[in-house]
Amino acid sequence: MPKVTINDLLKKKSEGQKITVLTAYDYPFAKMVDEAGVDAILVGDSLAMVVQGLENTLPVSMDEMVYHTSMVARAAERAMVIGDMPFMSYQTSVEDAVRNAGRFIKEGGAHAVKIEGGSEVAEKVAAMVKADIPVMAHIGLTPQAIHRMGGYKVQGKTEEAKRQLKEDARVLQEAGAFSIVLEAIPMDLAKEITETLTIPTIGIGAGPHCDGQVLVIHDLLGLFERFVPKFVKRYVNLKEEALKAIREFKSEVEEGRFPTEEHSFK
Image 1 (cartoon, rainbow, N blue to C red):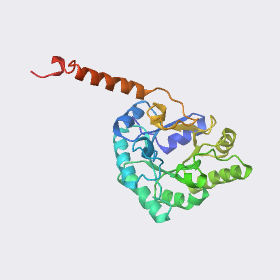
Image 2 (tube, one colour; image 1 turned 135 degrees about the vertical axis):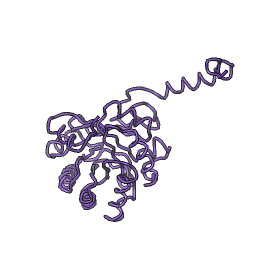
Image 3 (cartoon, rainbow, N blue to C red; image 1 turned 135 degrees about the horizontal axis):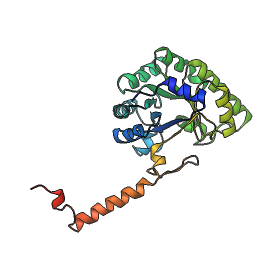
Image 4 (cartoon, rainbow, N blue to C red; image 1 turned 30 degrees about the vertical axis):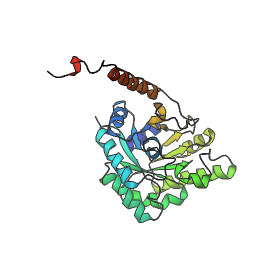
């Protein structure tokens, strides 16, 4: 089974085929996403919230991100694996950015990295690409900047903000990013950016006109309930199914109905 490459994603954009991306943070979920034929798996820093139970994405460390990426990489036979650069792994200097991005490739087995920010991170994107590290950019609502943004708010609503996002997208493409995540921006703006760029846009809360879509797998499967953004579609409620199974196990053990001879050795 051939591995999905950057060229495959570029070809999909040129041919008008939609790109699919989901997050995963461990071997079992990554295996399922890969078997389903999803194009790319993002090992998102969202693991801080949906796996570690933290309030936001800021505390997760490079070591933790590399650890989870390595599990996902072992499972992904076809999908491209993208490691999400955590807060303060790239903000301090170009050297830190390249060094930490390299860890995702060397230690984590990723095929690319994702970095949040606009024109201000273009120099770092260019340096990573020069070091042969493919980069997915991320603009709009960037969760690592929630304190500056004042929370999880839709971006690009004013004319100045729209102009800046369009400029950021252009600069990041010129810096060498192979795709750009557009998060929580008006769909008309996402459409305009998508039509302007030669690289794919991956939307999350950016409407139907992007070249592809990404969701957090725990949101899609109904496993995270602390808050559900408007842009999330819950395709199944696995939490309810899991609770049902766990309660049934508890009841059978307490009532002496499990284990039976079928589950015992002789």
